[in-house]
Image (cartoon, rainbow, N blue to C red):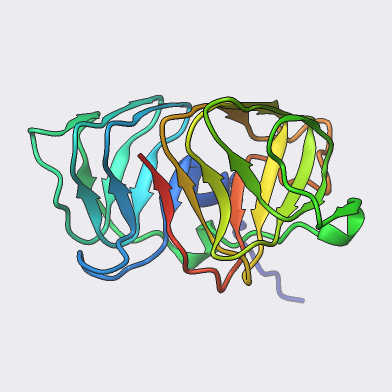
Length: 219
């Protein structure tokens, strides 16, 4: 009777997109719809994550981007240079394997349907909504859970005010529009893995459904 020796290699589970907080999967060259664009006069602070573009990373304007506990990487080309205020400086790297960003889409049928309602001012509970639309006088508090947005051409349009929430996943459907945030105070945190945040997604703050190729613009 023969014997067979086998070797099993076990790797620890890695977070989605290797822990990057902002990920652009578009692998096209600069021009048109870029992977990640840092622009305007925005201030972006990311703790415990990074910024990654699978293609182009472009920069313009007087923005300030600071990453703590992570990296700023791009796999294609970049229009960012030493004159742009990014810390740490962007570094070219390899493309992310598709296995690193495969994620199960949240199930919007598990939350109440408020699809005729906008999130605009006040405190809101998880559910399906038309859009998030705010201006300078609005203050929004999102209770923990899943928020599904349906509106086109903009699912999130924020031109001021403040929005906060801890343990939140915002799911933008494929038929919905993009995201535009300008001059607002944003204090949103994704759900942790424990306790199980379902139907929200652990570690996922904003999830653009596959097929939604609209821009996410923070200026």
